[in-house]
Length: 154
Ligand code: SF4
Image (cartoon, rainbow, N blue to C red; front, side, top):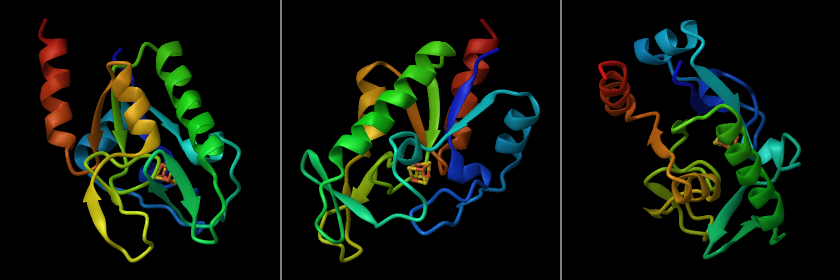
């Protein structure tokens, strides 16, 4: 069965920087979960960061907390962990949470901590894409459904 990596917070795990989740209620997500297709992971936790933790944003190739601490190494460790998980399960698709400095798919905060979004992607998203994994946001579930349908009809 084609497995899909998912940001753990989208499935209700309270792993975000402020200790909350960002659970998405969507029939496709529910169906994929019932099918046993979804593998949940929080890259920031996997990279060794605790919850709750200081909010962080990408500043070029670095990731910096609001207090100015450089947490790039932990973010890269988390991204590597996500990639290893994909390789282990032969995963070609991921659903990651939009706007996050790890998981953002089309946008990320601009590093000013002023709530400004810019076109971009998170550290984990970038690494997965470099390895040919197609990444969708929680707002693009129908697009993923189309891709999965094509594979199943082969
Ligand atoms: Fe969710 Fe990804 Fe942030 Fe973890 S790193 S809380 S999975 S958006």
